[in-house]
Image (tube, rainbow, N blue to C red; front, top):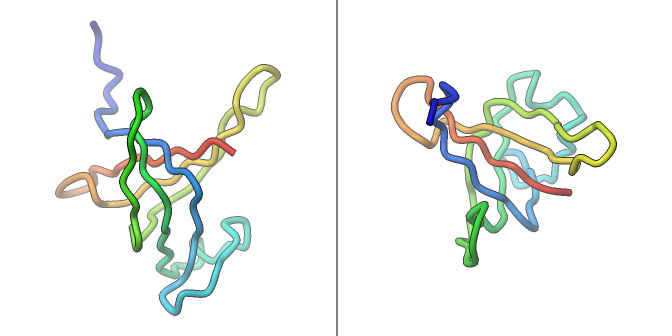
Length: 98
């Protein structure tokens, strides 16, 4: 099996909210993250396969976000990364199915 070169762990984040340092809800499309503000999330992290989940109260800060699943037959997904997976520039990818 070949490595994709991206060994970041992936999890599904359900029932999530994005907020700033003061706890105000933030729309990812507002440009707040791109302007350099620290944004955080709360939600339930679930494995991609199987059952269970862990409630996350203040995850982050977020480093970036993007969307996937724009083609017909694909599942629309909002993705974001944090610096929680390890040292240096290794990010954790958190995917959320809308």
